[in-house]
Image (cartoon, rainbow, N blue to C red; front, side, top):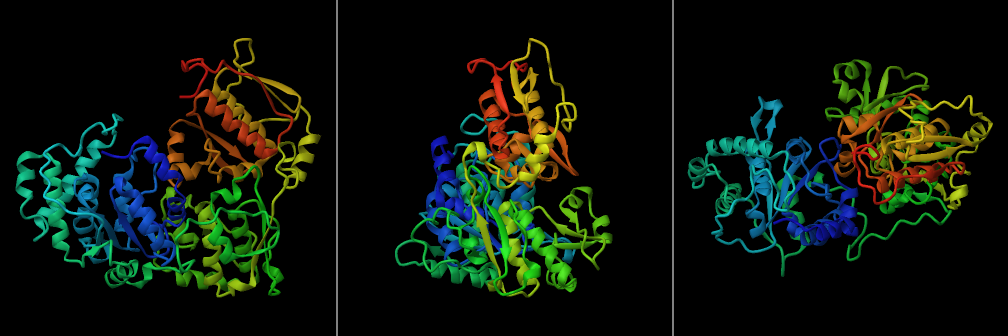
Length: 571
């Protein structure tokens, strides 16, 4: 059971799945959405054939587990949080025999009916609307083999470190559902007796939960259109779970991003084509906002990330009219993480939540105000559009100009960082001090030898090599470090609070089980130490290329076939 490595990779590479992933909403989002519940084996039909069109054509806002790199040990924390959120207005369940025999999808169904609590009404259990979409037959399953609930190993032999947490959550849901009239009538007794969830019992429980919901059945197939499913969603969840659609039909995957055309592009068009690869090529495109409509005060300078672009534009707006702040606060009153909070609310929040906000500085008339800043590359583009709407500006008055630099490695960042490079060239060996040197071994036993700006360094372990090179580059290219933390292909650099608060995608977050903290300017970063030699040296090379550091050279490294003993490589 479960996807093979090849099938998992095919799902990750599917352009339709990438498109949906880019548009995921979650508990921290401002928009209403529906929770997608499906069995991973059905991914191609569910995500590729149905959800992709619902998102692209009809503008449906969705949440689903987008971690496709192996098993997600945090799923028992993530799915309850995102289903229980007040802006999750329902569950779209894609049901067939595979779905009913999975303890994971059963837990999602049970949680929708017996797990969500509303603090505004005395923490009573509330039921989320469920829209069943039948993508296959529902049989009377007689398979008495174990579903794997609470088992310490997955079917592929990998350890399941959260098996106990899964079993504990299931027991809680089972007890609540058992006490609720009409949810589990026939199956609660067999499970209490055996304390084992077989596929036969799991399927019977699924059928009981679905029957207790009483929702309209949607038999997806011949004679049933997506329009029928859309209408059911609107009837059960409301129209607010639908945003704006981008195309009239979605028979083809999204076109690949291309920023080679130097002409300005509207914000709406940028949203249509934007993905990680937009700013992921051999170098970043420079971006800035122009106002053909004549509001020159809101135009920005050139920026190297969507974060910098959006932040600068919002600050320009607030400088022109501080009342924009009141407008945004009023429109987002009551959300978990509003775009702006004052000092008193900031101080009342936990340390982890405070890290999600950044103090607004240099804006006349606005003091002790903080703006939410953890949105990633995707989120900042949609946030730009949201702030324009909050401030009641005309979207059509603004366009994004971009410039794609020469991608030759030796001139990679020349157009972006001339000032920084001049400063770097004027530095001498005596005044070049890395931010945190770590332990750099300088005896003959070292296995990594490299030069930078004419000075030779040696390091015995890969971790020491990666951390020290990061420090050398961060001292000369601090702006590039900020940009590198947002890149998908550079996985060994991340902001400290993005890791500590679990904001990163799970596949990148896993690299930071082993890490070291660094300070760059006023910001804290982690460098991951979880690589083998080939991966680690490749990651360093990517950062070197991004910085355009022509004077860096790796001269010696261990033999490629050397087995890691903990002395030369990261864990």
